[in-house]
Length: 246
Ligand SMILES: [Mn+2]
Image (cartoon, rainbow, N blue to C red):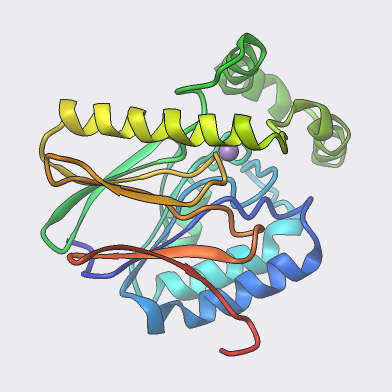
């Protein structure tokens, strides 16, 4: 068991969001021990992250250092998103952060928790599904690794605006959130010992209790008003961080 109060944050997309988003996140990481006793970063912390064998992307330095500091005080877990799945062994070996590119399973209080970012599960269009397959293919990562990091990271900066799942269409966003909630419900039906399924990716904050007593949680996107959530035995609570008040 990790603890009793799981703090969840997701989808900060650092690197393409304004610098204030990262500054607020650093302040939030300092405040996490007042909010709970374990932290889950549920994917797309960075708009792009790639763990090279000998090079650390400079843009992520401050956030990585803050997570390493926090991981000495409490369990810190991280799930890869479609933007930062290539974590390798960096998070675990160098920072003491438990990382999985796809899914983590753990216990908080008396509940079994599954943490999954949520890309590639319910994408409505074929282009997004195809992109998901290409980006996650082992060959893509192997070829990318051979590029010099200055070139590789610049290439992603240039391509990223064209690869993203950026939509501002309210109806599409609501549909994506609904599809994800239904997917989580099916997962809980398949794995009845699950008490909580935490997801991200849609950037739509939501909590829901199932008939079977399980709970689904999406904290929403950090970049969208510093959203996060705290999950305890009493249930998950959606919150927003005030950097100035801390
Ligand atoms: Mn995502």
